[in-house]
Image 1 (cartoon, rainbow, N blue to C red):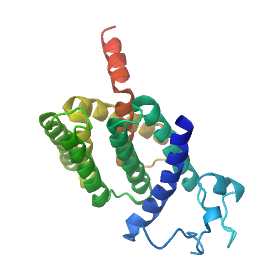
Image 2 (tube, rainbow, N blue to C red; image 1 turned 135 degrees about the horizontal axis):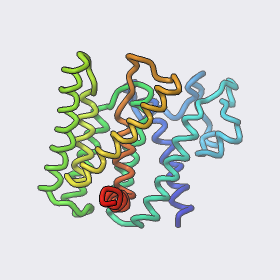
Image 3 (tube, rainbow, N blue to C red; image 1 turned 90 degrees about the horizontal axis):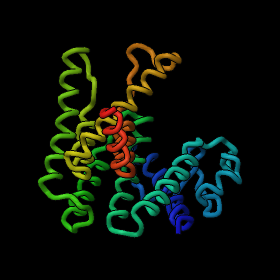
Length: 254
């Protein structure tokens, strides 16, 4: 069961790589077929097998022999891993399917934001449509009121951070793409889990920021995309929300 889920996830990961590459360029994600990012030669079907083809070809294009970013392999492995995890935690249920779509969208958003510092409205819109549809069909156990408050709180909090940051630092501290992403994620999580997701997101961002400053990888004035941290916080809460809450309560009550 989990092996099948992982194989399915790897195939989806291959498609997500297409989305990651083409959406920022506003190109169709359906046609033409996959091509080498270096020489633009069409990739043959036997060279387009997720994970396996990359390993067999040692990360190079068969036509031009140029290296292909390891990002493609990592996205396929990551998607396979998350798909198997969703299958293990939620099973073959409507809730599992809903969270799978959410995770897939967040993977694409994360990589695009890391490379281009943008969060495409089309992906946020797809997430909103997915969330609203899931609520209408009863696929996720969250009411309209909770979903609305969650979206308002998550997006509103990030908007407040953006305004305060701009006043203090005299420059954009957080983009509106992050705010829109927050609205989308709040819709899925509801207000309680939104609070937890924000807490985890800022905690992870602070840790990564501190490490990059100490190691000299981050310099004064450098910008860090915040979308990936929001995605990490949301995914962790989706999978381990109750465990994180119990751990937090146990710490503050010591």
